[in-house]
Image 1 (cartoon, helix red, strand yellow):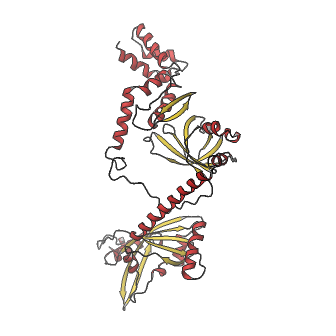
Image 2 (cartoon, one colour):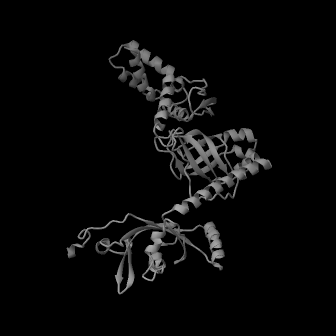
Image 3 (cartoon, one colour):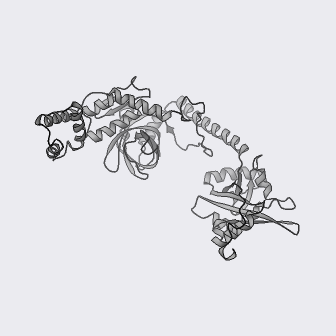
Length: 440
C-alpha cells in the first residue's frame, strides 16, 4: 500500500483513537489489507496522537500580526487564523499532539492560510490597499463615560456553559463589562454566562482580587458565523467584585496616563459630532421632536424642504402638526416600546379653494379600505408614501435636548420622543389595481 493511502486511513481513524472499540474500528477499516498495512497505520496514528512539547512561532512566517499565547503550558506565537486552527485541531486530536504541531507549522498549511487571507480581501472595499477604504461612523453615539475604560490585550481563560475552556484575549475592560477576542471555532450564544479568569493580569498586577474567576453575560457576538477566524464577545459583568476596577485604576495610576485616556474620549466625541453636523446638513429626512403627543420641533435642511412644503395648506400655513392626532400617537407611542416604525400613505384634494390632506397608516384600516385608499390616491400627483419612525428619548437625551430647547423658546419644555420622516419612492398606481372585489 502506498504511503498516501496509509496516511489517509490514519486520518480517518483520528476521531476514534481514544474510543474503547478502537481496535474493532481499525480492523473494519483495514479489512482485506495485509497485517503490515494494519501495523503501519497503527504506528502512524500513535505518532500523530503522541503528546507534543514543541513551541510554535509563526513570527516572520505569516504576513499578519502574531500574539503570544500560553496554551497547554507552552508559549506560542500565533496569528488569528492559526489561533483559531489550534483550537479546532486540539478538539479533533484530543489535545496538543504531534499531528497538531505538524499541521500548524506545515509550509503548505501556512501558504493556504495566506492565500485565504489574500482572497478574502481581493477586490474588497475594506482592503487596506483599496482607495475606497473608510472607517464606519456610528451617528448618535455620544461618548460620556461614567467609569474608566482600558484597552489592553491580556490573555484570559474562558469557561463556557458546556464546560469547554478556551484561551482568548481581553480587548476592552471596564468595571461593568468587557470585550474579549476568542477563536471562531466555538459556538457562542447571546445571553449565555461565561466564567473568565484573567491569567496574565493576575501575574502582572499582583492583586489578589483578580485571581478569582469572574462571571460575565454575553450581550453580543461580533464576527460572521462560520467565516471569521476570531470573534469578539461583548459582555456584562455579573459577579460582584471591584477587581477589574482596581486593575484599571492601577494601570492609569499616573496623571499623564489619565489625561491621555480622557483626551482619546474627547477626540472620539469631537469626531462623531463633526460627522453628525455634516450629515444633518445634507440629510433628506425630516427630524421631528415631540412633547408627549404634541409636535414641537422640526429640523429643516436644504434637502428636506420638499417634505416640509408638502404639508403647507392653501394659505401656505404648516399643517404637519395636525397629522399626529391623539389616536395616531397612541398607536405609535406605547409604554415600554423604545421605537416604532410604520408607512404613512397620503394625498391632497382641492375643494372649494381649500387644500385637504388625506392620510392613512397600515394598521388604521382593513384590507379593502386600504385598497380603495391606494386606488383613489395613487392616481394623483400629490400621492406620497412616507416611512415614519418614532423613538422614545433616553433620560439623558431627554434632559440634554429639553435644556437646549427651553433656552431656545424661553421657557421649560420637556421633549419626550424623536421621529423622522423618510420619503419613499412615489409610485403612480394603475386605475384598477387596488379596487375592492365588490367594486370591480
